[in-house]
Amino acid sequence: MARVTQEHLDARRRQILEAAARQFGRRGLEPGAATIDDIASEAGLSKGSIYSYFKNKDELLGAIMDAAVEYDRTLFDSASEESGTSWEAFLRVARQVWDRMVDPDEQERSMLMFDQMLLELRHDSIDDRYVSVPVDALSTLLAGAQREGKVAADLNSRVLATTLWNCQQGTRAYILRTGDTEMANASLELLRDLLTRSAGSSAVSPEGVAD
Image (cartoon, rainbow, N blue to C red; front, side, top):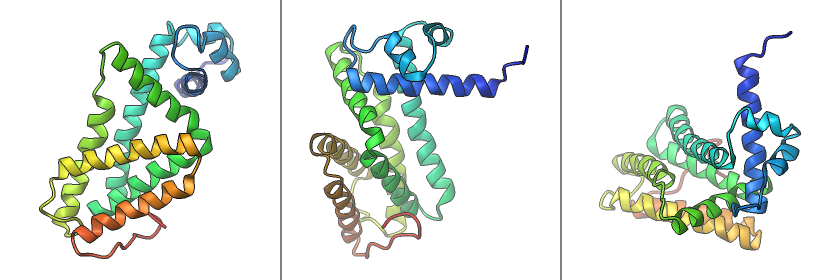
């Protein structure tokens, strides 16, 4: 019998998580909405294969949300490593976040994020990582951009980061409601211009970061 590698196991786990995210986003998180049968069918696997990785839907959902938090951490870390300045890293993150939001294939994931937020509110079980991780990282990048003279130094970087995160969430909802990705992209350019004007500098995009 061929030995199953860790790489294969990890790939199968990702396959299940991606299928579950699509089903949860499409059908919702209410009891009986997306079933293990639905997820197995979406993944092209048997129910037994799903249960060999996850005990139940709650564990599956928890793993999806953990992956979302880890995605944010990796996004900011990679942008910082690949950019010469904090401002370039900020632009890189913003472009990647917006590109993901306007991607039609990401619509179900966006729906899942909102559904999860409502579920947490109803059950008074807020997981603040979904806000604190990106806002903390944004605040760090913006503080660096202030030192570089790209953003007004007298602005509170934490408040600014929170405001930008809220704008991103509002844009996500706007895309879901209207499908208007052109306006969503225009909103990103406006936010960038407002930030650079706050410091009296022109919005110069590093090559390959923003249009």
